[in-house]
Length: 534
Image 1 (cartoon, rainbow, N blue to C red):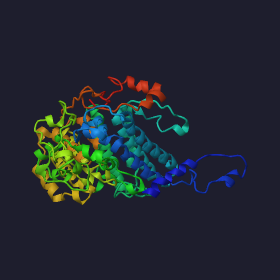
Image 2: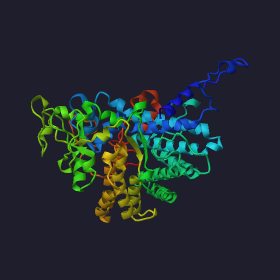
Image 3: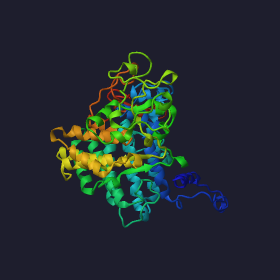
Image 4: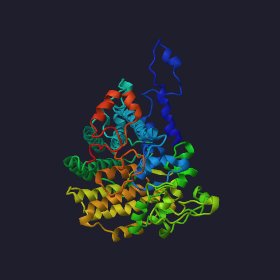
């Protein structure tokens, strides 16, 4: 990946100069390429890598959404107090930097995808790559909009044309345009044209059949975002997505395997492989209780209770106890400060581990196993499990997408369990086991929306796709979560429903920023609802 990604630096050499007839010939840097000779395929992995990076690690996912959604939890004391942003909705010293990271990183991905589109739009031989570029723009901009609400869109990515202060489009108009562009680009993909190269989606290798399924699966997800805000559009595009053909198996999962050795690090793994973070970050009681109540086979794979004592809890070379019966989730909203919210005051507190200077009060609570600490671990974009669960909901809502809700739900539950194998053999659960579990835990029609969306939460959460868990929770309302109301929190004791705009927008693009803020019901804060979040 290193060679392919680093080649984008040659774009810095696109400086059109002319003085004499032979100036270009005499002064052309042979290490740089012109727009005519540059291969836009070289941009694709940078687009994909930047997008997944926007959802991981200190760019937001593990600091914010993982704990807002009560997938992870932290007592946020000592060196890792920055987890207060997620676990307790409390500002830390770098919160303003963190909240801007998704915006900055995903817009970087979108800008590279736009550049890829511009370099291919007049080259019929590269039509597939142009349409892939559009699909990736839709992926990136939808995530930005899902996170912040109204965003620059029609004038975004136009700095080379002189537009540096873009207007903010309404999320409604953004979404409708994204769906239209996605439909056109996905339908235009053709196996008869040149295949994209340098594809960083694991197992894709430019396969147009897979990219078509990805485009239609993304369409399904975006359509289902609108089930409350615009039910007619949701139904129309969900049905178009199903007719086009969404993911058919876990082999279609869209994810990027990171490459730490060459500088492309999994942000979640990087966080969880430092002593302070590995000590502070635990699985939430909400998730562990859910998995235990359902006898879910993921419980004995994803979680471990560290060996006794503070030292063992701060290092990760010694494996912990993975027995399902031993797992205990950490309640969100507690600390180790000795007051009323000290972890020792919680109901059912199990006591600490170790003795003397080596004691830790959180030693019995479960943490993510070693596979999640891999700096070259995968980062997920969209999975077969999610699409099948969304199809189950679509059927439940009366959409003509084919199949039964029960069958789609079974497929989705089994696939979510199987996709854990992307983290390596230690997390692999045989397909037969996953299928047996899904069969034994069928969809109950009277409780369908709750079951389906709790499974989306558990699946995206255990795959560490925390932003997706948050977006779907905002849309569906499931699982029903009890908010944390810690002293000094920034959301009035409510679970955050959006991230405020980067603070630089108010100063650098003030007029357009002010227009967007004026459309938010309660201003640019953590609890104003975006358009589709009804």
